[in-house]
Length: 429
Ligand SMILES: Cc1cc2nc3c(=O)[nH]c(=O)nc-3n(C[C@H](O)[C@H](O)[C@H](O)COP(=O)(O)OP(=O)(O)OC[C@H]3O[C@@H](n4cnc5c(N)ncnc54)[C@H](O)[C@@H]3O)c2cc1C
Figure (spheres, rainbow, N blue to C red):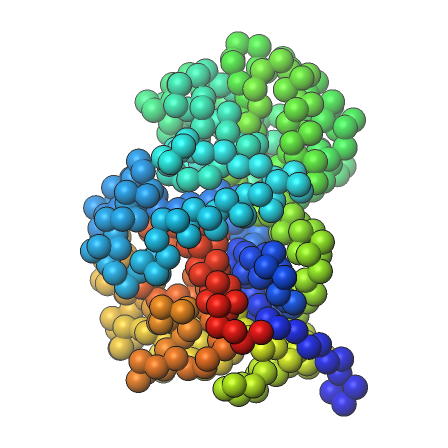
């Protein structure tokens, strides 16, 4: 530790999930010298869809046609929800800035104006979402217009069954034609993984080979849907090539994790952040922190042992929930893992979950998290900010249930925007 490198910066972003990526993007777009720390594994869970508010009221599990009306209604009834701190203008600005940032790296998004779109999942369910990757857009249109499509899967690819999709969706999207093709990525391998397929399909000759295999199977249909594995770095080109070979629209269908569109997001964000001169300390963790009000935070960063010290005028904490590692649930309650901040949680362990796993109210533990003030600063139990220069974004926030409300990435992006705005307005730089 004696010879650990010291990095001085204005802002340290802790977390490399969607919230951390967005916070580093907003900060560096505004000229803030930024360091980002965190594992990028979590982002590979992201389906690539950007949900804003898909279900409202959540107790009734009602799909919302217009996410903006749903947010307006939600914040009247739940003014403690983090969206209430932002308002439509800022949420919209945050999404637009994100889309513009990702575009030069080959990721484009589409929406149905201000409305949500419905997208079919491999389980055969329909999911409401707001921003859809262009690679999936023909699927949204085909479902809406009930166009007869082929759904093609790959032998050995787990979690994607064209037959199941066609069966479950029979009444809502009639005429789906399931087909499974053999497209080996390694000789004799019984199982294939989405990343393997995607890397292979970045190669033009492999796309040609895939089109040859698909050709005879798509003759009687007007479009073809495949699992979202059509390239990592050149997915738009992969789809354009397949469409040209086959002569019909080709679309991707989101898969179970690890998700290739999540990997694309990671790659695109990382490339943009490097271009913006963000120092990326991906795969490292904050191991310890010496916070001091009015002074710089000192973060000890490394894998197991400290390798670097970051001195930062401000920190944005975007360390996620239980999966990401920002929260830990133990015998004595839920704790925040880096700053030991108080977590707003259901007081006794027995009340973390309702008896009925499908309880329409959702489980109290899913709304546990950090309470913040209007400047996105985490609060002490007394209700005053824990630190002047610490801000919070993403799923670690209390009073939201992103999974049931279907607002995961939208909430992460919008609160990252709010946290960066609060930091830049604070004069702490
Ligand atoms: C299976 C699945 C499917 C999803 N599908 C969708 C979808 O269809 N649409 C949608 O909008 N959203 C979806 N989401 C939600 C979305 O992908 C994000 O999980 C969500 O927005 C939360 O992001 P986050 O950045 O707050 O947290 P996380 O993604 O959990 O990221 C937390 C980050 O903090 C880092 N971290 C934690 N502790 C430390 C430490 N000590 N030091 C440094 N770094 C640390 C972690 O390494 C990680 O990088 C899905 C999520 C999952 C899991």
